[in-house]
Image 1 (cartoon, rainbow, N blue to C red):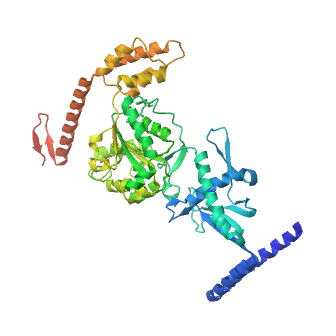
Image 2: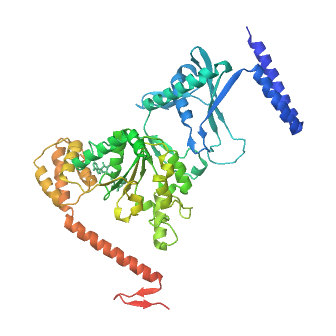
Length: 505
Ligand SMILES: Nc1ncnc2c1ncn2[C@@H]1O[C@H](COP(=O)(O)OP(=O)(O)OP(=O)(O)O)[C@@H](O)[C@H]1O
Ligand SMILES: [Mg+2]
């Protein structure tokens, strides 16, 4: 038996030899060094009969996280907690259970058909010395599997396929759904290889709680479920396995809520893509390549992120006043500060990512765009095939109100329902406004009565369809007039109070 002293002795001898080798090789002519390296490798193979396979986290020019790495990570997370000494802990799905996994630079042993193997989780930092204030991603992670060379066939043909298969199964089982975002309040995103940051997806909305036309609800649900089960069908017709939805309608009509309901129905992750934070088309491609299957990719308010001409909204042809205002708004909303370099994503870049050759990577993806102004969108962006289903979410109707009353107050009938029914026929009110009125404001018993009365009052004050249409028309005309005036002013033409045009000197 080898005692600890002889181990220490062996260790120090190897260390001295390695040090000697490192010193000597500096002075070797390179031809000689190659020669020695060859024999060194042969010598090592003789005394070290083990095979090492490494599984790096990123492959394929670092565009996409390796599937093998992810599967191994899940496989090892199951065995790790019993065997590893250094562990990482994460909060589990039901948030009172910790998930333990192997820490970096830690080794565990595994056994397969009586064969012993070693898994080592490796993290190396790049040799390149960079000085940065921000966390860098020069770290390369990989798993290294070591086993005796006489088990090569067994490991390659039986063990590794099993690890991948089990790893994938464990990942699906343990999967904690995530909400990803590409926007970051810091400016170091472009240096990071993990292009998406995520938080657990916890939105409670479901189709049951969604106040929309019941027939439309059923149709959407069936469409989604059909899509998620149509892998073979899509393969048969030669189409990438993805489906596009365009949700449009006035503010507060449940577009974002419906996306959450979709994710909950299909058990998908959500990628909230903030186009204004994407540097250019290739950054967009990289982002989309790094989305996993079983996910919904969301671009909210698409009309605000892309200009129809294919340029960004903040292009040079904008009115200065508007530009300043927009920059201020953006800064207030956490966007890039005024004067900061703008995103160069183009309409064609986005179209390419949605249904170009790259779009087929990953499969099983739902793409959702939302907008308040469908008329502002480029027809190319929303044509069938890109956005397969166009869903209009409108003002609250009686059916929708009944869902909200049941959700918020737990009532399915009430004497006030009749008058609310009548009022909703002519008044335009968003489900968000109805929901706000139905929200109990204190702990008293007769909440249902109080809230329904408030709603009736709010509905009476609310504009009717005709009034609202009239108002919208006037607003539109005013806007057109303003734009015309601005254009004339830019051309050096002054419009006096009576509407006469005078050319400036
Ligand atoms: N159809 C609906 N069913 C149930 N709740 C709704 C519905 N529409 C709106 N709400 C409620 O109103 C709030 C705002 O809705 P949501 O954010 O989904 O609106 P939106 O259409 O995305 O608006 P915006 O265009 O301004 O983004 C949500 O918190 C939700 O609870
Ligand atoms: Mg929204």
